[in-house]
Image 1 (cartoon, one colour):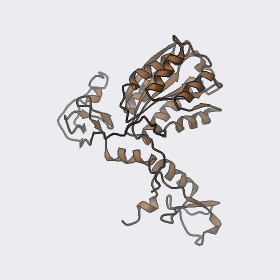
Image 2 (cartoon, helix red, strand yellow):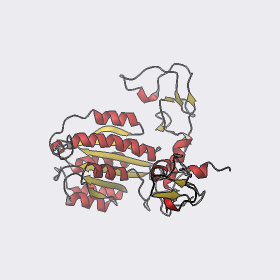
Image 3 (cartoon, rainbow, N blue to C red):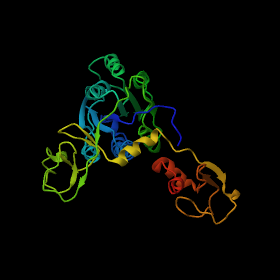
Length: 337
């Protein structure tokens, strides 16, 4: 394994702040900035939880100069996506201060062993703020909250200043594909700051019950539209509360409930898979050799990629899939222990 020389946070608490002002009605992104951002935000949430399964996200919409928390900080993917889809109209002006303030009130109370982050996607070139932004900027720095901004229009000095002061990033998109890539980059955990304190976190591994007694899960106990009695779910090993899916923080005993694969997927940032060696396909001795991933021949490939550990060869598509999604070499994993 390749040991990362940079410390990163395995557990993350992130607020996604979306500009929902009238500036998001422009159609330089099709069919409009707002509709395009809704689609990419849904993809971002799915990608984020795939790479950070034991982290949490919250969503804030800013319009009419006010910020509104449309989705609480949690690990409920379906709820986040449903709340984003439910957003309809773009109104009024954008307020950087109010968006940051709502996120700050929640993130400032989060434990210090987890990273605290705010990702802002803004199409506005102005911000209508009730107070000087310096006051909020000081609070963000003192609470070790990292702010990253993705602009949809042009570079704005205050966005660059806030992101620089909090050790975040600031980028302006070129087109829809570039915007998608910039949002995808936010899925990877940032480097840990000196103020992040290493700590042992108690977690529970709930058994999955498929034929239990009829009961109501804690996920939907307050949601009258989806509350129904079921016989299946994950039960907390401490208080026996039932949940539809994990990871989640138990509402009764506050125990973090996860499955073993979630923890395993969280560690690939700390121990990344080594890059494969690029080799011209014409240098292969055996013309019948097949890819170690898709098992297809290298007939139409100009280059192949070799794992230095197990000497397995992969095509370009499988090389990308192994490093971006799988994070394990199939050849190494299939070798006898």
